[in-house]
Image 1 (tube, helix red, strand yellow):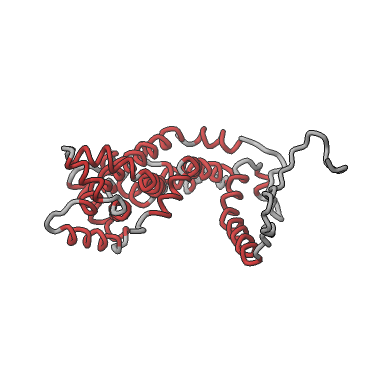
Image 2 (cartoon, one colour):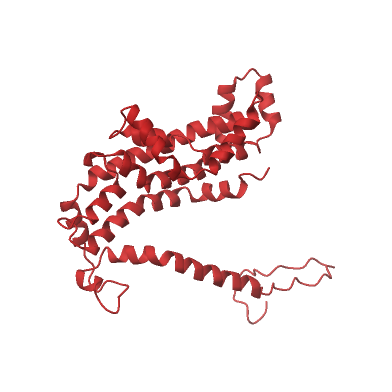
Length: 302
């Protein structure tokens, strides 16, 4: 035992076998290009997250901190007064529940219908399949705002204005979701599905019990995009609702901000409301981050 080793210590250095004359592997030098990439990504992350951090911190600031010059990032005195006043002047639970109902229904319907159509376009042979897929690609190129007037006329004819159905049905399925699910399902081996058919499994059984468990990353990706788009949707709920009781949270908050009798120019309350709008999406993304990353990395590889 050497003089520098403590009794009972276990050496972590790799030991050479007798007769092994190979030189020890040198330590990898840190790549300057990789360090530069990390620095640039960190700077970009800081720039993109700065508005969110400012909003989140401003929700807990006093009016003096909000109007301070020069601006202060951290509140000198943390307060929940902005949230309390917002709850007093705005029926936040009602509008929050409206947004939850609409976003959840839109997300579930997209997961079901987009998966069905994506499976049909990827794994079923039928007449006109390529033409239908061409229509899906064409729908991706149509600006969403161009469809607002036809959708409003259609919902008016169906007497669905000021209803949850009028807020959900126009977005129950989207071209992007169909494209995403179709591209992901193409990576499923055809031999697996043929083996299930040879064992007597029907298409419904194959779809629900074999295909859907294999496309969980794509479902997580689609759920995040769909929930985010529905939760932050402002124009259509503003057009399709006249009854304030059917307002979603973004519409209610925008209406509240423009009413001088309620908001009264209080930036603190607006920051608190904006934080409550963003928070559910952040929680959802953190919960599904692993599946989301996997879905983005593997969708459309085939």
